[in-house]
Amino acid sequence: MSNLTRPEVALEDMLLSSKDRCQWRCSAEQCGHQWPTQLRFRARAIKPTGCPKCWKRRNRAPGPGESLADVNPALAKQFRRNLSRPRRGPDTLRTQSHDLCEWECGQGHVWRAKLANRTNGRGCPDCTGHGRSPFECNVATLVEAASGLTVKLDHRLRLPGRSQDRFDLYLPELAPGLLIDLDPEWTHGRPGSLERDTAKTKAALAAGLDVERIRSRGLPPVPVHGLAHNEAGPGVDPEDWAESVGFVLRRRGLSWRELKPAEVTAALTKGAQLWEKVVAGPEVSAVDVAPHLEEEFVANLTNPGKTPNRMPPGCNDVCLWQCRKPDCGHEWDAALNRRALAGHGCPLCGYARVGAANSRPGPGESLAEVNRVMATELIEVVDHPGLTAFDLFPTSNKKCRWRCPDPHCQFEYPAPPCRRTSQSSGCPQCARRRTIAGRMRPKPGKSLQDVHPAIASELVEVIGEPNLTAKEVRPSSAKSCRWACSKPGCSGRWKATPDQRSRRGGTGKRCPVCYPPRKGRPQT
Image 1 (spheres, rainbow, N blue to C red):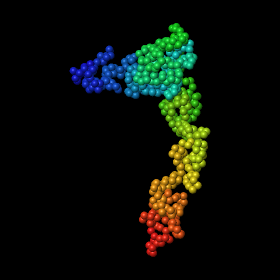
Image 2 (cartoon, one colour):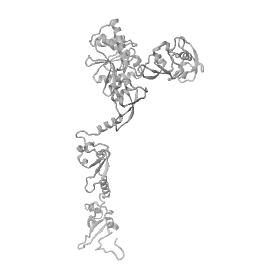
Image 3 (spheres, rainbow, N blue to C red):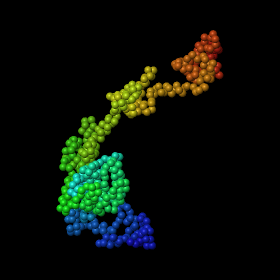
Image 4 (cartoon, rainbow, N blue to C red):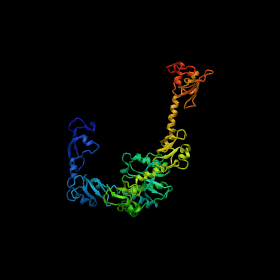
């Protein structure tokens, strides 16, 4: 490599985003082609450029015996169409072409993938073995043959605080059951894999499970205290990994014998048969597991034309469903496996059931039992006329109508029980009356009794509020009151407000007998 723009600058002194034009040489032995291009194009993280000659060679028309149809006829049968170059098919495509194509497996699943990825072993994403792989099947059959123990694949558990976890191998005969995870480099050497493996192992050990991990040689150990570090590989040779499992079992004092070549062949054959059975899926259809799906099925959105009786229960095709309840009829999208295996139904009906169940109080939890006084004020639940105080939580947010228990009020008002219980609220009409009365009460030392004791001694009653006294009335109050003259022998009686009496320094509207009004001018 040489820098054409700035020959004095070496590669180690250049930034990856440099726009310097450099000369490059292809590292492939059969190529050695040289070409110029900027460093930033070669160093970018997304789609970096490479040798243009190799690219043309890889995507050129195949020669005799080089096409996909000649090299891999089984893969060519799954080809449906070329999305990158529609005119190219299995007869005119090389096996390492990067054309994006559409494929259909033997189970009828349709997906998109590059031809080079398919040639390198990537298969149908829907036929992944439901959490298993041929490597795990072969290791399991070899362990069974060498140890005589039963080995189950893809054991799934729901650990506290986590979603469902799966363990590659499970030996139930070793109480309380030995869980073994196989960590090959090609799946556990990716970014974030070590953190996920560590969290999963810690959760399993915290739950009291017996866990062992066998990691590919070269991978860092899982940093969990007390966990033994077992290695196998490199690579995914099932015999090598089965021997590592045997080392774990021998360390625990269990028997393990060396298999003869014929026994190894028989075990691997059994593993291949097990994998074929796994990939083929269950022998029963989704309708056999959940007959009601046939009635609720509307259309297959992923693979139009396929019906539930032609799909296994674990198929993840997204379908359109319609609830058959007369009062619902809701339509929604959901994967078939969520309906057939997880038992999911109509979401609207589910919300209604959950809401009804959560809103019904248990024994001793209803409003009528927790707050009997408030329950007697309930008239009705507005949107649910059939409900009573025994059907409501004290914290319910359902709109209700209440009646004030005060015989002089009987005001009706709307409010949810939660507002009444959390804020200790009651009749708003009585609350307003109390607020107004509180605002009209005089401050200490400011009442009629304190400011004008002589006038206060003549107060008989406050009309309309006979319970009030001169200590509870302001001098400026506009309440109509009855007064009686305090002079001996005077029988004067009259009506006036405290404000009228306290004007002019206490010489306001006085006794009409002692101070008769002047002719032509009323008393002030």
